[in-house]
Image (cartoon, rainbow, N blue to C red; front, side, top):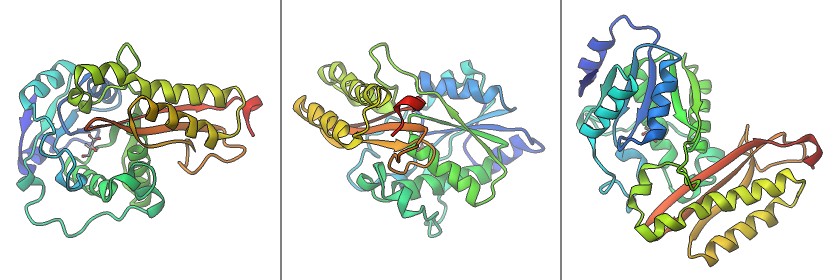
Amino acid sequence: MQVVHTAADLRAALAGQTATAFVPTMGNLHAGHVSLVEQAKRHGQPVVASIFINPLQFAAGEDLERYPRTLAADCEKLEAAGCDLVFAPDVAEMYPVPQMFTVQVPDSLANDLCGAFRPGHFAGVATVVLKLFNLVRPRVAVFGRKDFQQLMVIRELVRQFNLPIEILAGATLREADGLAMSSRNGYLSAAERMQATQLYRALTEVRTAVEAGEHDYAALCANAVRHLKMAGWRVDYVEVRDADTLAPAAPGSARLVVLGAAWLGTTRLIDNLDFDLPAAARA
Ligand code: PAF
């Protein structure tokens, strides 16, 4: 496996490649990322992973500074997973001049759910992903379902800018107690880690009730928020949405997703569960 740090070295390493499969990451890799690399490997070659903590997608006061930088360990995991090439640029390489041109993500995606609590986040994600796509020029790229809203933003980016890239979604990997794997789980204290599965459980309870035919989604979500708050969480949102559009679930929506974001202490966790709604349970 080759590791390159500049756009020039990346282009040289990829010269003539037309079937590249790409996994963009911010590093601090866990088994979830490894599974995305393994998935990429089944869909293209060479497999390229990027490791870049993108300042543009962090608002002031977020965890940009404390986000773990673990390049050596990440490269070991990528090599073991069968990755062929790692692109690990620094900030000056990705942003040699101030990034004045940015992707404007439509309000309906940019200011909804996580976007409502992280101003500018999805514009930062879309901008860096577009830059990475232009540098790597992949045929296929893999993104985790765990970041469900991000996946929607990337799919729309590719569709509306006619990028010739197939976007694949990778399954969320979970710890034994159900907690979705995330680089941010490492911020949790031992006590918080034991509690962290409550978010997954709350979303699961909402899904179970919806699948059983409960139609008052707002009441179910309000109940989940109340329980999480009573357990000490600060809740950004719990919502039931149409899984294909992310719009509020409408009567007749056949695929739904329950999404949640909440804080344990200074750590913000997100999770989601998407599922087909049985015909008998539709409103
Ligand atoms: O999901 C992530 O790790 C990041 O948002 C991404 C897609 C690598 C862009 O910085």
